[in-house]
Length: 511
Image (cartoon, rainbow, N blue to C red; front, side, top):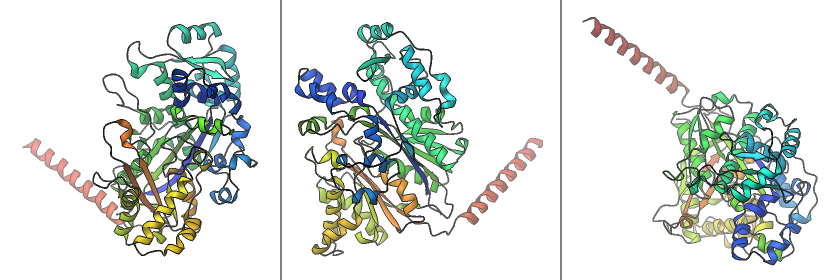
């Protein structure tokens, strides 16, 4: 049976400096614990402009305008480098905050989002020429007065929307008692939906696919929507599919902390390979909670706040067309309950075991994509260069397996390591930032095989101390289609059986 293929991927970033201050958990916690802290007083002076965000090299790599090879060649820290960036790319875009507020209101079907009147007009004008949203401008409603919005925030538990520290809108609570529907959670959920819609629309535009051909959507972000009777019950997937015009799709949400996108990728590949669906999309929106997560470390060292963007992505998994990279759903790494939590145990489960199944060595994988955190962010916070650290562990496993000499570790890391270019959004760095590049690398580039690895910290939910992770190998398509004749035969058999049953039913009815 043919493997599913990776058809395309899209990536979006949204610059949200005011959400860093008002909605990131590091900042909201600090306001509760230490409201007069020096950190909060200095924070705004360390925020970047939209232009700085667009011209930041890792962001350009995330949306595909700058190759990871070019990023790798740039001296670190990257925030000190000046490059010429663009808002749009073939894979997606970097959107400013004011326009994103408009997208949030477009995605609000329960009339919870309100913008101040003059601000609403300016947002509508800013989106007038947007290639993906100009047809939805009527969904940006006539605005409210500033006094009304202030009263909603001050007296009715609404969550404020700010631009340059000025209150320009609000999100109302969806229920007076249910904490799962309070204004703070509703804003988080609407951010996920809006950035997910952006990602899916970019994906469909990029591939030129009719949205009506999408059969199934899997949403795999970090947030979970529901009410007091079914916290996290969902469904982000169908709400995003609805606004992307995927009228024939159904879908569901997969949650697995940072590993969820890899779980979703494997699930999508399996659904397509089994011929349950022809076209499956995985999509994830951004997480406001992660904005400015390492901000204290950055401000303390005099650095800009680099965790100032929401991230979204989408990927299309389809039947084998003989061209696009194949997803080897038979070569899966998985962190089992019994795997252990040491770095060596985790790497063995996620990397070594699928290699053993395939009969490959660590050298047979041309690119490893796992925990693609940006070192500009992680180094000042004391976490080092995470992608490089992971490659060193894989190299060490190779030495243990007698596939590398200890003296070859440095060369292995230099050759195989992908630089970390993903924003701190938890699920976003976990393997999937490479999917967009993988399509080209494995079709027209010089690579034949890549491994996508997702890791997750299940202990954060206080239900288990276990770690989590999944991996999958992606390969260049050989061009051989093995299932076409079998598929045609199946159709013929099904048709013959159906005709026989109809004939039997008709004869039985006559008797």
